[in-house]
Length: 128
Image (tube, rainbow, N blue to C red):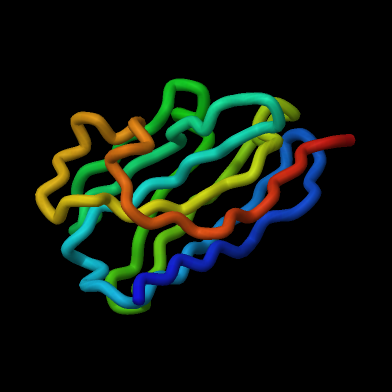
């Protein structure tokens, strides 16, 4: 059974930092690309970042480029998202997602239908 469990969210002031984690189980972790998405109230779920199975290739949404860093540890079967220089507009539920195909090259990484399993989410709130 595939499981994705996020953690690390919380309340942080603007300019602050958080590190999100996603612990994965039930599949061959290093064979699949992984992503982080976020969804704010009243808005569609949007792709934040994507990382290939080996960690060699990475994409970011323009809105987070230069502030967020995605990484993965294929020994611990965990992916991470480091959020720096947080802004109030980063407030959202953050979700970890597993790519549907082991051959994903990330061309459509920001499309939700590219993923077959999702975590339950971890809330990030940026407020003074």
